[in-house]
Length: 502
Image: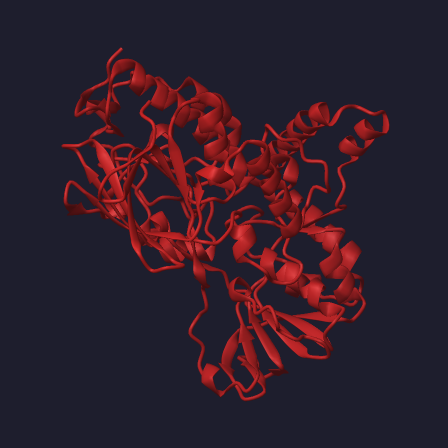
């Protein structure tokens, strides 16, 4: 591996460039320096600190929607509650960075604007703007590892509603929450019904006059105590945390797999179990059929976690309420619904999702040709036809994002080691001769998973093929065994413009 260098044009060269210092980028850096010591790399991060999502979002009550035993890394035990606050997650990430000497590799405040691949040089050239000074800097690398996530951090998704300009109060999106927003004594309407809304509503309820969760349609919720009984039991008998973490992690993953299979094989039974939890926590005064019974089977969209049932406690106590209706228009004093009812509000929170953002709003070119990402075919949801020496991390919907980040990290390290062993400078996936005529379909099957952000952005995402290799399967329980056994000499890997070497 070549050490990092600077040339007279102030361009820095690295073996690997990682874009993004969130959960995925930190995982990439850890495994790269652990598995391939001596590899030169840098992390380019647009924000002024690490954390990605957990730094971007500052709304009240922000917490994980996945358990930290699986959302945390396999190499660092998690010792807190399963569902953690953003502050706890950032502290955990900070420890990983400090304990492994990663800070020196991270370039904060660097917004990557374009990425150019040259087959003649077998090189990526990235241009980044230093946000503090406005100056442009250039970086080159043999391999590009995209860990910037899948949504636009600068702005959330807000539908176009009639009369928004008439509203005399304040409209806030959770993704751009003002630090000085005063909610005390205010009437608040939170538009949305997913995990963000379910987090914000109980966090605001104790401070404001009243908060209403306005939803167009219901969401499934899973209500669980924010403790893990097995972890507690093991701690009681003083088992070391280094052992507790992998044991509890395996237990959770086993239970998740069983639950997902039940959602597919016996959806009505799972539906009634979830609704039973809602009834038990919300009390008799809530119309569960109207407000908490979705029209789709469980796990066709993400199931929101409600630790300790806090959302339903504030509803039961009268501090919050739920309205299921559609918005006709905004008025000076609130929102007029299609039913004719008007919800008066001082503050309206639009917890309406985010904008899908593939490859970080970066202009990509491959040998001078602008990249149309939608026209590529994905290899296992991480590599793409026509794009050499690049991997994109896109995690799981039904399991923790981090699980896939680390599977991909293992694969990339193994791939880079293989390329070094055979003297290859480039690699890209290409369907085998027998697969060239296979049917291509959108990134995901909407019958399997169909959240709004994916449906709105499907035209931005690559295509999938008919076999597991050419799909993002969302199946951790098989991928954990498949990824380590990927044959890097398979003819589908094209090295240096030719076929794989042994």
